[in-house]
Length: 93
Image (cartoon, rainbow, N blue to C red; front, side, top):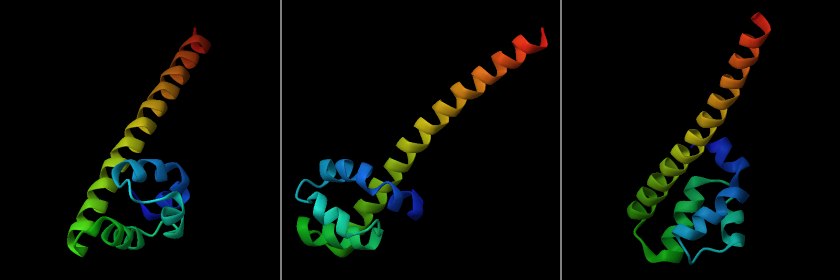
């Protein structure tokens, strides 16, 4: 997930982050301000992981979120495109 999208959706994503790392609070997550390095550090500190393991988990987690958000957007855009095609078809007849 791109950094700007993460920063813009931090409030939406915080619930997913809390599910993954239950020791993190909304306040903790908000303090990271969407910075992945800060989130990795927070995971390292609160969960007790090594720096490398925390970074790996955050990277993997964000990749999973990226797929989740992208697949939903793709489905929505496909539906919109289908409706547009139907409207075009009706107008051309």
